[in-house]
Image (cartoon, rainbow, N blue to C red; front, side, top):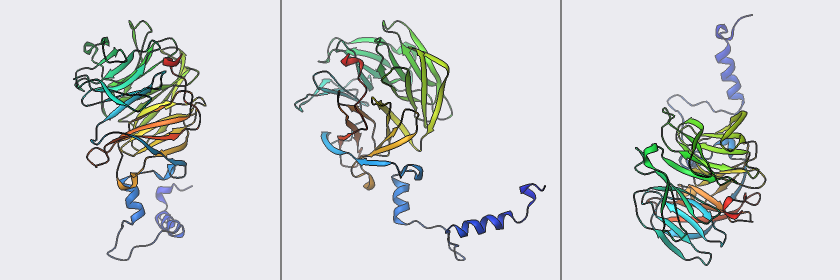
Length: 344
């Protein structure tokens, strides 16, 4: 039998097949040309494989600032107050249940990037520091006082996001590395905060991290490699035998994540003004788009939070220098959000 590379008719056969599928032959001197639809998809991409997903458009809910500031880490407390952070100035905000916005931690050098609430009410904040030599995880009271450092700069981590488990320990991501230097990872901190255990090392910038309702799966997004990691746990901080997989490779930059009680995973797509939703196996099943994305606005979608006990999902984004400022949008997810340690 002849091999394909020795078959001289193959190029002609392929060309015939492509033409038969509807492709148009260019006249001499002509080439590829943009049309409006394809150009829009190029600038504000939704990959072809994701365009047929069930899609909803979120609604404006609250405008945080007329400036495009990098909002992250939203979490509700038991009274319905919504806490979140601003990365480059390190500020921590509180949006009360009656919609009054206050700053509980003013501008600082911690570069807060993630926030989770302990069941004692304290806010735990992941700070990227100088983005190079080392950041911190620290806790403060709900009014911004009584700061306590949990992980200091000497460890060399760049903590970006964190989530508590039911024992009071927490997983956090390490934001180090780039697409060719997998220096980051995902780690576990014991409930007494004395031990730090590497769980998923060698990531090209670990970013989002979240747990399922049963606490036996931790999901991690890898920013520079564009991968979704599904990690089955044997115990807190311990991977089950053959427990890791990469069920999805993203077209773009995955950011922070949340889960619902059905096991679905919600991933903010930074630079795309949307949230991708995956089922418990890591297969995409839906997407949430933010208003004005087709015009190039609200693209820097970073994170989201479920209002406890509901399927109401609040998505955070900013428009950088595009004029739309920094906003929170609201929609409904497939199911109620996973109950968090702060409410147990």
